[in-house]
Image (cartoon, rainbow, N blue to C red; front, side, top):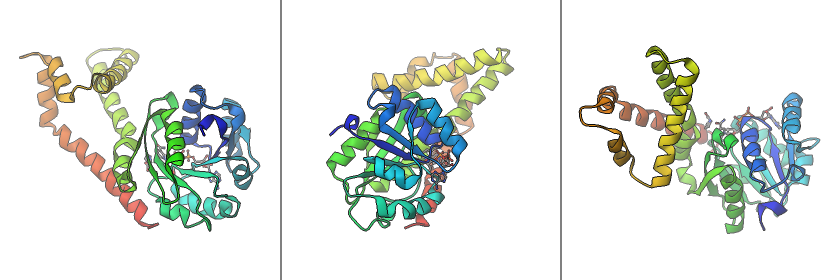
Length: 274
Ligand SMILES: NC(=O)C1=CN([C@@H]2O[C@H](COP(=O)(O)OP(=O)(O)OC[C@H]3O[C@@H](n4cnc5c(N)ncnc54)[C@H](O)[C@@H]3O)[C@@H](O)[C@H]2O)C=CC1
Ligand SMILES: O=C(O)[C@@H]1CCC=N1
């Protein structure tokens, strides 16, 4: 079974659902007719319906009845209410895919009386432009075929990797939260360009394109970032002067600390439901 044969429902049509839908529908793996959404915020629901021409379910249980794959895309603190609401309608031949940060597959399964397959995913917002980074973990009742379906879904919006569930907090701190860190760096580099006299628009685009290009070099050449860094760096030149300043500012330790703080926070948020 592939994704093309399945109906996919999104409970919660917020920022992440929109990002996944944008990538998924432009990948041609499914069609808007095969997608359902439900959201308690009707303005939001109608915006997403209009943007993608997808179907609107009357409510969350109606969505469950119409969907082979149900993507749980509400905030973690809302998920308990949603699971309580839909538990009686979910069948074992359906697949639950949760993108809620910090909530385990065991926690989600505990709401269902039967052995409903659950896959937990940590995606990120660049899914919106087809450049998402997602990690997936299969719950106790999910088999290889369920994992394959979910990988197909998230590979359609970027790169998706199967990991053990214990790795999810690390993924959340790294690639889940990571886009925000990258935006900070892009903004700071653009500000520096403006300070040095560049027009704002050009400074921002040069900065963003530089990050995009550097990321592609790492992914496509397969070379170690240190080797690529050395290729930019002329002896006695400009780059080594900039790198020295970054090292003096302890940029590596600061970035590592930021990711570890987010990993720690993910553990704390998840501990509430364990
Ligand atoms: N924003 C991000 O970068 C990432 C978010 N996530 C996870 O994705 C999930 C969704 O996050 P966002 O899309 O950012 O949140 P959001 O707040 O943009 O979207 C959630 C949507 O759920 C709707 N909603 C609230 N209660 C509902 C209910 N009872 N039934 C149906 N819909 C309901 C809200 O009206 C809203 O439109 C969260 O669990 C978050 O942990 C995961 C990875 C990255
Ligand atoms: O900030 C958060 O908690 C969520 C999870 C990863 C990205 N956004």
